Length: 398
Image 1: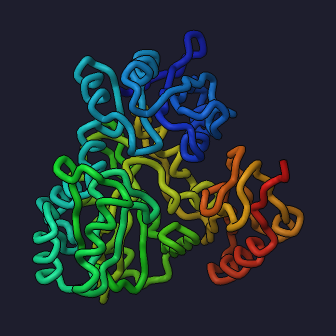
Image 2 (image 1 turned 180 degrees about the vertical axis):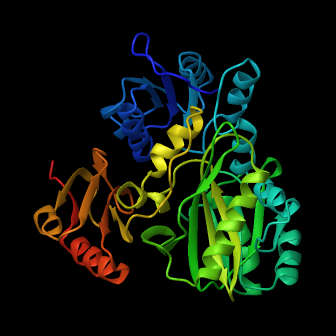
């Protein structure tokens, strides 16, 4: 699909499967360019529903609802991987435009398939093994060397579906605990993967987009910091040498050659002894790219809309260093969301606040973020930490 002109009557339509904060920010960019946006999400008042033209309430796996949104859209995309890729593949075969490719989505949904694809493409990744039994896990632990990370092949995110095994004695209880308590009770039709635990120096991330005509552009390399397996802080540009920036961008560009379809992809990486390894790929805008809204000529969200609709990709130039810090639900608070401390945070020069509009908060839930821009990245970090110290993600008493 290549859009040569926009129309108002009837409008050019984009469908987005997923109505969270990523869908909301995609919708906001699409609306700025005059598109009509329909979202599919099970939550009646999800963030994207607050800005979209139409909201189809339904499950991400509901074939009927997915067919409805795709059939009513000129192009369909998504803000979440955990959706019905099978029906999207069928709809693509029927002539509908879906980006990124359902084939790519199916591959990325499965960590094992994703690793196999990257390995076949000759891209640098941690060592890994498929786990089909307890004996298989024991052998993998011996071959990879402990510690290792046991993961579900499907469904995990933000650390969910991961189990770090440090010693030989932990292997059997970890395996049984994983099967019985975590995800899988019927192991015969499920998959697990085990990877070497990487002792990284830094975690890096690159947002890279491809348009429908094959044009590819990378945003700057960013540095990410996690707490409890959830992205906490992003620094752009990453505080590494130019050689590492070049390696990360080169790997991101090579990764795109292995993936099908248009759209923006978030590529998470490890920096280890001067080498860069790919950790995981997200076929959509990503938390590590939120800083691009304030800091780059073209945000990751605008770039994604441009890419999937066949428009020319925008400049990815970094206009100013930036630091993004997530606003997460705090421990001990669950219920109707209330964000306190905004007066103090917004009194600091260069602070931008994004509050996603999720009705309910709970510990660890991503409720918003702040981005701070400054000509000096260390000053941006200091301001961001100071601004974040004012903010409290609370719950109203009901």
